[in-house]
Length: 229
Image (cartoon, rainbow, N blue to C red; front, side, top):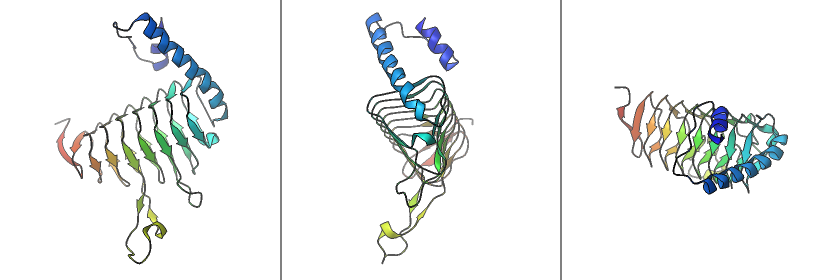
């Protein structure tokens, strides 16, 4: 029964592992029920929301009127999401944001950031940071490992006589295509477009755009092969 309910929510077959005990399953259902109740009150302040929204404890959600979430979204405990920006944050259906992630659109109120779009069926693992001073787009069905960081801004440091913090910044944006896998602790820098179906190795630092189906690794990241070749 539980599998069929989740399958309808996710719009795909969802089977529970046969090794899970009844007590463990009930504990999971209880926890999700509390998250659903918490999400019901949180989403009342959102710009737009689907019917089902799960929210973990100790989440900090700022500028809720600039947040839109689809159906079946889960934001786990300890996340900090600040949507203060020009466009806000849009999260699609069946998105899972792991514990203690940070989504931050603006660093200062003197120059607001642009915003974040996360498409359907995206999974973001624990303690990932997304800074959206420029636009950040994460395509559908992409999975992002733990401790990743996405930075849609660069500091200018060309004038050695002026403190770097007082110099302007450049903002180009980051685009991650659909069906990508970003490995643990990878870093994606401003101005990068990652094509459809790419795989980024754990610990890689992506400084340049990558074509579709590229597998990239290293610091800085380089294409080592293609998935479709």
